[in-house]
Length: 131
Image (cartoon, rainbow, N blue to C red):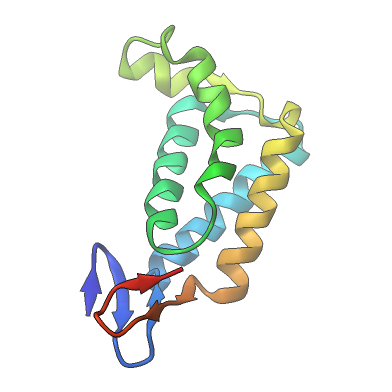
């Protein structure tokens, strides 16, 4: 069964990101990390889109929304200066300077890669989710 874009198996209690989407996340995470190691920058619009994708993923899989602040912080810093789509597409965020963000991305990479985008849910008797 699909629930809010996640695949859910009610028999086993497994909630997972669809395989294609999990692969897309891992690829994008690794590209941003590789860019940081090459002393590169990522366009604001791509980093913003990526942040939104991780927000979606964190609704079903325990990635930890609080860790998303390291990704969102550089976006917020300049968001008011970027008033149109073109400005957001060409403005570059120097990810190589953001060591904490790269560390968080490595953690997300490990979580999504190791578990293949799955998490085990604990469903109690009335059907509510226990965490």
